[in-house]
Image (cartoon, rainbow, N blue to C red; front, side):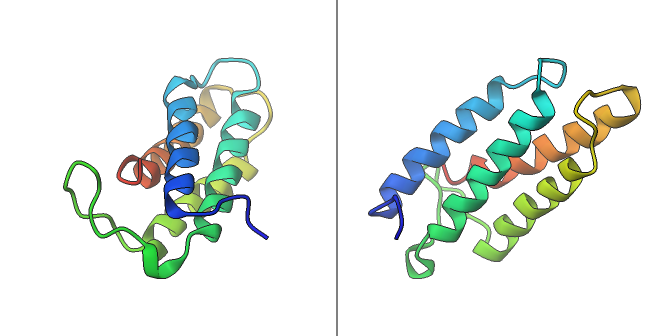
Length: 111
């Protein structure tokens, strides 16, 4: 059973996730765990989305990539985050930023 009754509910949830993502900075406490949680929430919303209702265009009129591509970006972000330690250092900062970029890319046109 889904928590969402319509794609509109999913868009609202994804918009909230996107807003939290935009505010998250890599050096804030627990940033890796918080980013991983946002990725998990995004993936859950995507799996609940009825495929026939997948949007063709964003609110801005841009073409939305296919579901499979958006889902792949979220999975790539999750994979990158799984390999990161809880505390970021200079060597892991780039992976964190790449994961955040993939999530922003996945969410931008859906919100």
